[in-house]
Image (cartoon, rainbow, N blue to C red; front, side, top):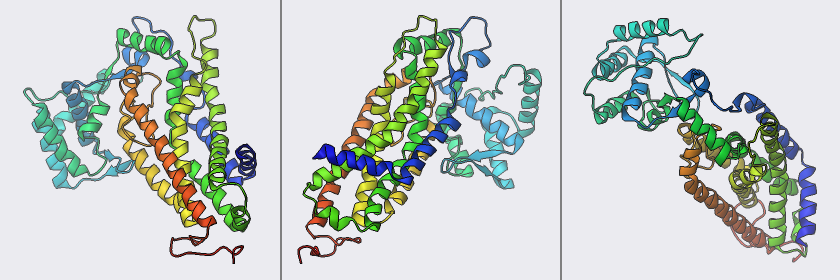
Length: 418
């Protein structure tokens, strides 16, 4: 019975225009955000290359480096009179009053010993000596001698208060921004991790999951809500309620069908990074992990699709409206905003959309792996719980205990029982 219902539900999903829009948006997002990974493919580093251009950068937890990075940004913001914040994940340009600018200039003087004009001269001299067109070397503002890290944090907290929500001068964002040029040894370690521990494909599939997790945090709710509302519009509820199949079989088959249909294009798209890795490493002795796409699709992305779909089924079934889209939209927006500071990976927390916007940093992934597993298990359990409640609601509707157009108010007899 379950298998038969599942096949019918797959057919119903395949007939939905919203589902095909889901597939198209998914594909367009993939191509526009990732496209070809050829430019990301790492080669074995060679000695003597430019550290920034060839070796890249690495995260730094050194307090002195955190201060340098933040103060460099502060000095340039003052000189160019250009401050930006990200209050809800999107850029906002800040215009300061004369009093606010004076206060921030005072903070720069206290933390670096430089006035606004001195900072401007220092910035201009740096870029004259280091032409960005030839070899990019970022500007560095040195902290004042004897500046304690705690005092620095207090000063930056005041800068954040002046600039407003989403400032780059919160402790969390300053730590995320602090990077050092990677030397040959560091670049070689990152390359070995990618080849030996990640099977080369693993790093690129994490990057794939980072991008696709963004869109999968919202799209499935449209497919789920549409499936329920379509039955309502077609006045199919009485016919479905009268089926001999149990409520458990009807809801779980519908849920399973939507998961299968929505994960199918994701899995097809995830083959693209694998194929590119195979092509790029052809002729080398690198042992590729050909099945990494299955591990990442099912372990990383499936829990997100599960909980978003389950929430869509639950809210649409209980309200018989598109409320699920609004609720999921708010959750998705919050998840995206919370992930802005954690793009480098390793800080997965309990966010619906874990971020790892780099093909390297295997050590960060390894260190945060346990938390990531707990995160994914939590959302699987939440999805199962929401589905179980949806089954109970559906069963009550079949027995006439809920009004079919919204709230739980009173007993309601089915027409076929009257």
